[in-house]
Image (tube, rainbow, N blue to C red; front, side, top):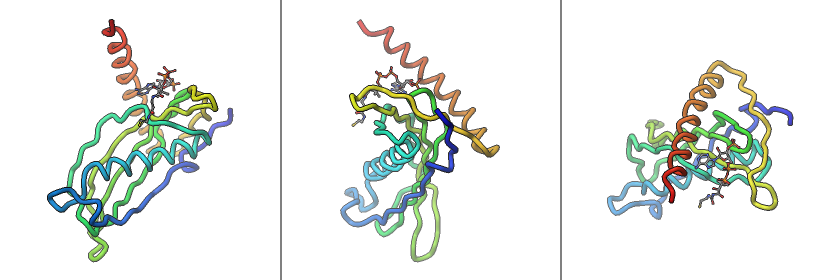
Length: 161
Ligand SMILES: CC(C)(COP(=O)(O)OP(=O)(O)OC[C@H]1O[C@@H](n2cnc3c(N)ncnc32)[C@H](O)[C@@H]1OP(=O)(O)O)[C@@H](O)C(=O)NCCC(=O)NCCS
């Protein structure tokens, strides 16, 4: 299968945060941000695979700053690593105050998707071509995270009765 560059699937998604996105404190609910993180990353995985891809795992999601109603949520997502059937997508979330232009880093996350065939089984995806130094660095860091995930999976499986 022919490789595809990172730039072919990366996206930036922007969503205006409205009152229905609020938590009881009046700021944007963390779950709303999580949903957009998952949705944006999923689009990247599907654009690369040109297949349905499901979320297999989310490594961690730290919220650095609150998002306010009226802010524009900006999600930048691109592929870091592609295995045989799995894909790691990195998402950076920023919040912009559209009145002032102030930008704040809200969250970052790494998500793993698995491409599925028509029967719902994992299916091979095109290899990832990393062109820039930054893409190559992200790729090598993603390979380390993958080793941790695989080791964790093996450990969990061996604990099952
Ligand atoms: C994700 C899923 C397809 C994996 O199926 P599986 O039979 O365990 O897959 P396999 O063991 O054959 O592994 C397939 C690939 O997925 C990766 N993978 C599987 N589980 C993973 C996990 N929890 N985290 C990261 N990667 C994972 C494997 O490393 C492998 O990658 P590779 O082909 O690039 O080497 C299956 O667990 C599933 O359907 N889960 C539900 C997904 C879903 O519905 N998500 C939305 C939740 S609402």
